[in-house]
Amino acid sequence: MSQVIERTSPVPYYEQLYVILKDRIVRGEFPVDERLPSELELCRDFGLSRATVRQTLSKLESDGYARRVARRGVFASTPEETSGWTLQDTEGFLEYQLRHGRTGVRTEVVDAGFVAPPPHVAEALRVSEETNVFALKRVRYLDDEIALFSTNWFPHQVGDVVAGASDVLDGSGSLNSTLRHAGHTLTSAQRVIHALSAPEEVAKNLEVAGDRAVLRIRSRSWDQNDVLFDYYETWVLTDVIPLEVKVAAAT
Image 1: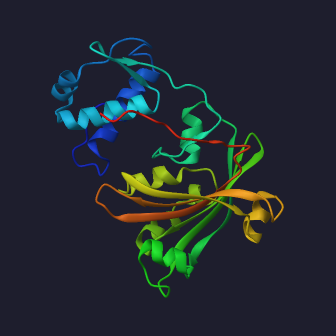
Image 2: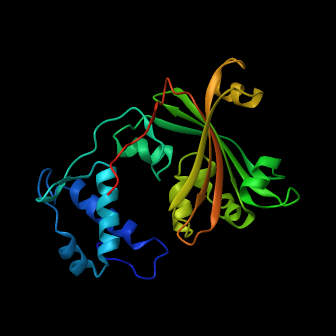
C-alpha cells in the first residue's frame, strides 16, 4: 500500500490520505488513544492543503477511526461494532459491513447487462429512454439472511467498466472499488427513502410477501468531477439491516 500521495491518481487527495492514516491505525502504528499528527504536521508531511487534511480527519472521525478532543487534538480510535448501515456513508453496503467487522456478507448477482432504461432511470441518469444503460441486479446476504435487493444503473461508458469487471459480475468483487479505480470516487449523492409494498420482482428476490412494506432507497451518485455515474434502487429489510443516521453539530 502506497504511503505517499500519488499526484496523478484519479483518487482525491483526502481519500488517499484517509487510506494511509487508517492503515497506520489498523496496524497499530498509531495505537488507540494516541494523538495523531496535527493538521499542520500532516500538511507538511504530505504536501497537502489544510482543507484537504481537515476533510480526511473528518472522515476518520465519521468512520470511527479517530476522535477529536477539544483543545487537545485528534486521537486514534476503533469503530464501534454495528449491525446497521449508515445512510450518509460514501461506502457501499459490503465495504461498510467489512469495516465494522461483519464478515458474513455474501452477494448473489441476479442479472447484469445493457437494457433500455425505465422512465425513472432515464430521468435520473439524464439520458433518453432509447439509450441503453447497464443494469446490475444483486441480492445481498448478511450471515445467510437476505438483507437487501438492489439494482444499479450506469450510463453506457461507466457500464462498459462494470461489464468488464468479472469479479463484480460473479459477486466476489467490490463494485465501489471497481468504480474508484476507473476514476469515479463518490463525493456527493442524493438519496430518497420511501416505505412501499414490495413489487413482484422485489418480493421474489427478498422472499417476502408482496404486501409487505419494505424501505426503498433511490440514490444518484456524483464523482469528484461532478459526473453523474450511478443511480441505484435498493430495497432493505430493516429487521436484518437497520438504517443508521449520524447527527453532528454544524462547525
